[in-house]
Image (cartoon, rainbow, N blue to C red):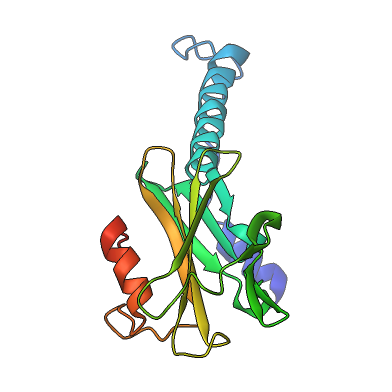
Length: 199
């Protein structure tokens, strides 16, 4: 069978209607293009998308960014998807600035440009204490204590409290931390208990 014969066989069963009318169907509705009817839903959808984008951006907005002395500690507070304030801290262990220097056999506390001789003010049970308020009204508490009889074996801690009195972050360095968060540093455990520091 040739292609011509195949076409005849396939299309031979199709026939046009006996009467064909070229007049308009009077029962058909007249369609009018109304740009406002199409534009309004598009505008509403666009406004909703922009609104959700702004809301999503607001949830990720940082509400505070606080640095400890020497930028050792970085505390960031944000609002999460549920509208709750969430804080997280980063301790820059690769570049910790020491709050103490030794000069002529003396131990000097050097935070905020200070040069306080603390050699005779610290022990394994009693720390040297220092505090200052930053530009945002946060109070930074510093503690220096000895981990042994040797002055070179000292430890230190910085804890930060917001203007409302809530502890927002902190760290200790050069002390051994146990799994439960406690330390063998008597001086540090003493101040944490006295000030109700939660970490």
